[in-house]
Amino acid sequence: MAIAVLAADTTEPIPASGNPRGLPAQRLVHESRYVRLRRVAQVFAVRRAGPVACLGVIESEHPHDTRSSYDALAVDYAERFQDELVANPWERAVLTAFADLVRAAGNGPVADVGCGPGRLTGYLHGLGLDAFGIDLSPRMVEVARRVHPDLRFDVGAMPDLGLPDASLSGVVAWYSTIHVPDDLLPATFADFHRTLTPGGHLVLAFQVGDEPLHLTEALGHPVSLEFRRRRPDRVAELLTDAGLDVRVRLVREPEAFGSQPERTPQAYLVARRPAG
Image 1 (cartoon, rainbow, N blue to C red):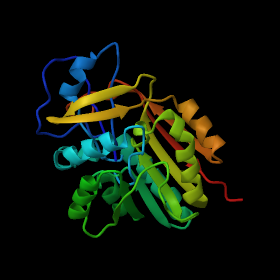
Image 2 (cartoon, one colour; image 1 turned 45 degrees about the vertical axis):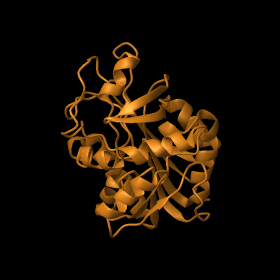
Image 3 (spheres, one colour; image 1 turned 90 degrees about the vertical axis):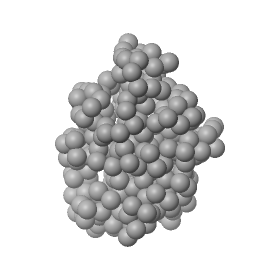
Image 4 (cartoon, rainbow, N blue to C red; image 1 turned 120 degrees about the vertical axis):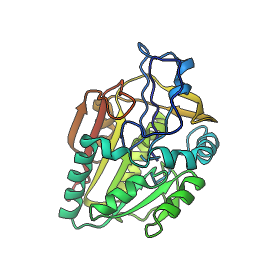
């Protein structure tokens, strides 16, 4: 699922209504020179849970906290971020290119890992992909099934998705690996490699940076959520170690999409399981 933390240098809380800046997967915006931690919770927003939406977030050192937090946020999250892709042309462009790659490679099933309420899963389906979602949160999966009754959503978690070997033409982890602890990231990428068919593609989206963030409140709910920003070169190195061929590395500067400007660069990586 995708989550977004919209952090601004302000003490005024963001209204519960209205659309965020249109970033489809989990957006975590935390910048030490702009944001004081005690203010972050006031401007937190969860995304796609989007997502980053529906292969589960992860079995981290606090899987129960992550699951229960998203269970509490599910309904409000779905309502607040249902239209966020509309405002973000960069993310639509990346997803459209990914869909083209999947179709060219046979157009098999695509897993939306960390799907949250299924917003991105539905978008991928609209691009002609056989997309389904997995999420750690049962409540997120319930919401996704209600909003998208014709699509498949399952409860599951990284790093072990429990899917058959070589069963997917594509994997989308859209701001969902931000919840994966560093020590579980290699196993997560190895599982992506295992589930992809030869020639299948993976697309990742995440915030660029180094500092982790822990949130205790979001959208008016008490939560316990860990977020991790990462450096694209390091993520690419781990993907290569997992046997994946990194084809695209895109980093863009922060934009002022929607009502909340981004305060950190955003990264998109596309990798392929070698065909041979």
